[in-house]
Image (tube, rainbow, N blue to C red; front, side, top):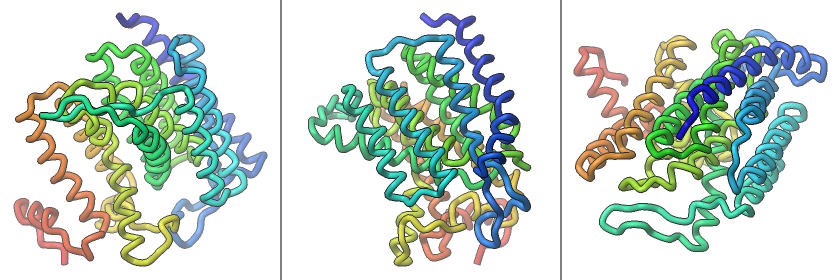
Length: 357
């Protein structure tokens, strides 16, 4: 069983450490010139901002885990992989690494995790039961860790967005882990949520500091590994869909960005202002409102996942239909249908607003 007192103390330690160290890291970032400068394109902040704030999240997580001292067969490799990811993100914030250089760091981190034997080795599916993936499990694990790591990084485009989305997603995983009695997942989620919240005070609009790739890659890596420890092991129907539902916003925003760039014959690594958060701002929503709308999407997906984790087949199918409709809305906002927005325009008609042309 869980020791509630210990969990609350760990939560307090992680949140306080992240909160207190963020201003110190901000000063350190200025000293080493780890600063993000505004431009006339995607970056809209009016003045240079420190961008290694994610170190505060890392320190908060480390402090909480040092207190809890969780035991798990794969913990050493998970920590080593996390260190590799943090170093990769820090170097990128400092020197603007090329995409392939960042990918090398991500592959190295994923390789360490996989070497421990922590892989997505089986999935639970309706009518079929548990499916052993064999060698394909290794490939899927690589794709999952690297894909989720980059998805969180790509959504880090507005103040407070990545930290808030991660905290909400991790809270959903935490609730599912508590019902499944997965102690290691509960420990990791508690300290990561607490660290995100401690940092978010300084990072919400108008941000005093950015988390940078140091934080975004670390959060993505953490979510990917935590979901492998818990959600893929869930015995519910369609268990493999649960983690996808929880972090659907960053996952599908990334997928749609890739599709959009391929259609437009652009490099898939080319940054643009067509992610869902920028699209919301183009539609007239303020910076804060756009972030809060995406928080709401993430919370809704989290609730779907919690219901889904213990649902009957009929309930699961209903949740899937709702999930697909929500993803359609994200796709329309992402602009991959050449401006066509049937679902959004239908909703606008229902509430009496003029169609988007």
